[in-house]
Length: 428
Picture 1 (cartoon, rainbow, N blue to C red):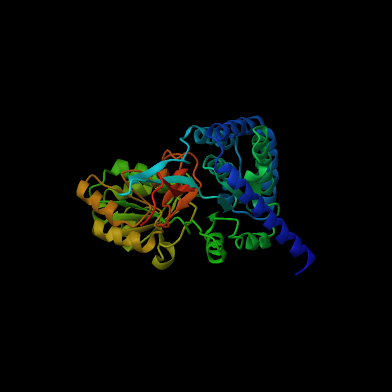
Picture 2: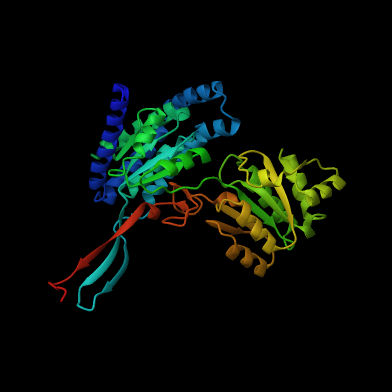
């Protein structure tokens, strides 16, 4: 091992040890102190908007020079609206109830002592993410509020932005006497640092990767500690025979176009065959007017040909599995809601899936049959988000089944322990 490799390993291990020590004090930090840090951080974000945008401009310039795609540059940019949103998100986290110390269950043993199940922080959480610098603030705020220390490893494309935000976090912590080791940034973009981090399960209790499928799979395959993840967001909207055409159009266009570069944007549109000559044409015109490329199966494509609407033939085994993160939508025709459910469970990624219908029984079959973290009835998939679910900023979205599923807020950043209180009972 070279001197540089030894130095890097030592640096990352020290980072983890510092985080572990900080987590023990954070676990008992009073809510008033945590909230004071968060409110100070929100104020600093607003006050330092100009310097944050200057740092972000360096990342955007480098990203453009290195050929980052438009969706990735969009994720990277800190606009005034997004900076204001970060500050507001931190304030919302401060207003939420403290998730630590909740009595989840309680019962009395036959011998008279009490057994309580109480929520506690997980400990040290590593966040691995790409592109979006707002994740630095969202994750730091949620981890602090839930009493967890966090190690943040952002992508090289957001290096300047992440470090500028980390400086504000440390300033807020220090103003209220909280160790800056509560939130730490990996100080290098060297990929080897991630490999070292993923092996430090003595100090880090959980890893949450946020980014592309390749990053998430690499993390899951190499981490020694539990990983909470979703690989990709192949989200589906099913327009049923009993759907209102106006409502279906609004929902489909919103799910695809409102922000196509995010994981809860729709990638597949499923049509009941009875909609092909009615609602489908209205939906298709609205989508093409919004610049969406439609990749259609034979039935939906033939309907568009008759109406003079352009489309591309779908490649089923490629397109239906694809997370485009762009203005592209694959289309599938089915003969029943049960066939739609089977399609979602085959091609979807267990993330966010919606049905548009006026039929209650059909909607219920869809909601119960689709094996996804979030299922919608007459609502856009774009609401799969911590803020929209009332959780404050989210730490990520999980398509796992243990221990968290869907948008992860404060409660999902805690585990529990048992507290047993008695009067001298012993086991005979």
